[in-house]
Amino acid sequence: MNYRGHLWGGFFAGAVSFFLGFCTQSFYFDFLFLKKIFESPDNFFAYQKGFLVFFTAWASSIFPDLDTSSLPQRWFFRILLLALICFLLLKKIEIFIFLSLLMFVFVIDKHRGWTHWKGTPWILVLIFVVFYDIFKNKSFSVERIFLLLKENWIFVFAVIFGHYFHLILDSRFLRRFSFLFKKLYR
Image (tube, rainbow, N blue to C red):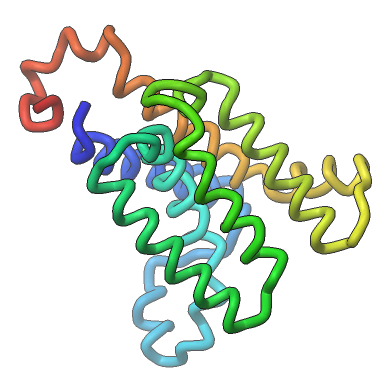
């Protein structure tokens, strides 16, 4: 599947994750949010978690193809460079270091290498949670890791669902039906 198909697949994965989080009340959201944000920009932070869940699923559905020289990879590195500059200016050195290391993992292997493994989203979630715990608390605790995973289960779901949805879109089974979505498979 081409990048357009994965972008649309990412929007679908984000919408499913957002809908699940909304239905399970993992975050607050109402459909008049734009009106409330325009009334007071401070209201944006009340809706931040919902947007982050959507973005997490969308980004994790694009993540497996960031190991190729492609349009999504170029945009990813542009956005990452801006984020690095912001975190450096804000003196958030821990996040800066983590994102700097993240930039190099895409050139480690060939396309459809480790980024297309079925275990990759699970490993990435664990690595992120462990790094977060170490940076936040200056120590490591298995109890805190389990608590973080339990409290933020919707993000774990978004990462895993987005990644697996990408793998489904790349599957040989779906290619049999490529005549139905010609523009997404060119």
